[in-house]
Image 1 (tube, one colour):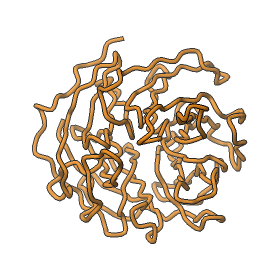
Image 2 (cartoon, one colour):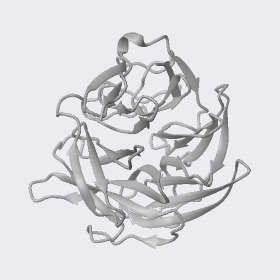
Image 3 (spheres, one colour):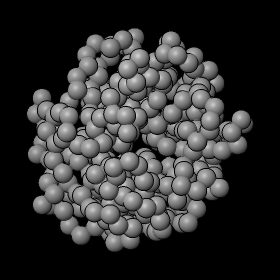
Length: 331
């Protein structure tokens, strides 16, 4: 299985910034629509007094509010992260309740979309712990749970869940016994105990998952019943410092990886090669530089990068500050 040549850091042109409103302090993930609009999830972890929202970015880089989301009835907060659009036009969004001290409060939501406008918001599933990445394929929505517990030796356990697109109000059984749980991952890194993060799926149905703390991309295959038929760690340890959001680009058959700790965007080919497309030092993102990237998506000939701008152990980024931005990078 050969991939097209990945872009290289030498091809990078001068980036530009899309500046977000002040109530968008932690942009996270994106869904690219057929008209090249981008819907951006903003969980607002940096300042949770601003409720999480979904924003629209037009091809002309115009920014507007797409919709607000219903608050969680127990936590009184909402923190949208992974977001993808189903063939119906509806949006599936991970609501990551990681700031709440009570475990297993995260949700998977569906935003009904009618004529391009947001409608009712429905709960697909309750009871996830750290709901994170979302992908859609062949009538199912996949969501990662980045933290489901620890092994006896202290490694982090995370997982991949799958729900039918028309399922609603599923109460996830904690502890790894829920029938929607397809697979689990183990993360050895203790400083960044975040496991399954970004997720995407290729033309053949292979599921790619970012093991964030260990900085790896893992590939899974499943049969129709959801049983694992293959599992491979695609990249080698040390090629990336971390692996947050990912995006599979079908024309080039490459995976764009947000290496949030290294303040970089990596490109992974399907045979496991890793190249750096863009990387910056510590900065505020005002010139279009990367500022703690959490996900990169392809829009035409450009890469749009959400700058999460949070500080983690060992990260290049040392301060969360205005402006709140997306980076636009030629490729």
